[in-house]
Image (cartoon, rainbow, N blue to C red; front, side, top):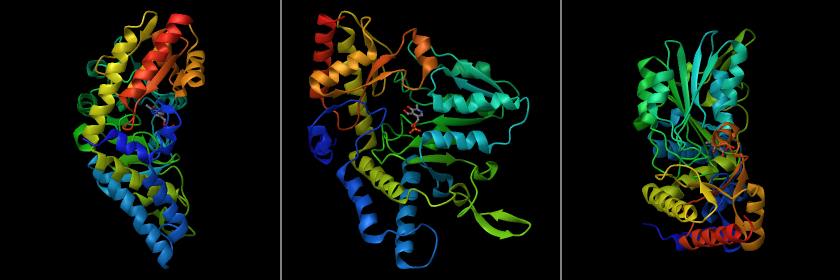
Length: 393
Ligand SMILES: Cc1ncc(COP(=O)(O)O)c(C=O)c1O
């Protein structure tokens, strides 16, 4: 088990605040920032272009990051595409498939808008979209997804861990059901990669989208898309880096993944993300999962005992604890937590309005944990919420 108090030395801002907004974005450790500094100060060049030493060094380090991500996900490097974030990765699939009128997509009511709106927009092209409901705790039973499948279903798009409920879906079972009707499966792994072991082989998915700036502790503006059969997807952007040859009549695309990475990418970001992957692997992903889930589960149980506090999500949640305090506005609760104890939590609809509507509330306060969160921080949160509930609610 890694030593939580020791890793905190790598995150200087944690000396200043109680940071419990990790589902939105995480803090970046010193070695990752140093890896990005090293790029700028020692070998900055463009990627994949030219023969001089700086461009070669840059290209090698960029590809090292791809290999690190591939190893993490049990994939091959040629199936990993670097993107700006989960949102871009999902949109690349939505735009990259050649949809036909009558095609059908199954998604769920617990999705982040980033895994919902791109599919809803396809209705304009005559694609139908079924939105499957979760159970009361925010878990989508695989059977509900299976029941929604038809002979026309081409894609099932589902989140592995809900950013509203912290619930884990049985993605492997959904994958099997989707494949039985000839549909592909896309996993939104924004809240799972880095927080728990995620293997594309075990999930049996066709696409997996994730961000570098959440569980992976990498920089903002980085993301990834795993594509099982890259030849089946049309690149959304074309231009420098994506073509093998061009004549006046047309062009021949580069082999994957280059065909999906048009233009100069976020090179320092990708190099930082590769270093971040090594950081979480060194800490041990199963250790991280155990630490984060046990903090979140015990916090949820204790918050639930406070009169007037309502906690949402399943008992076997991952690192996310959503709650409300009486009839107080969630933003007010978040402001008080910050003003009184420098506790940073998220409040509102969490870019998942259908989930919030499902709960029948205006929004929630959301505490979310990461590998560097401590039991003392959780104690302070519970204690402060208890005071707020006693005095204001
Ligand atoms: C489940 C889920 N999907 C997608 C996203 C979008 O991630 P990004 O903003 O990095 O694109 C988030 C962000 O919170 C999320 O929680």
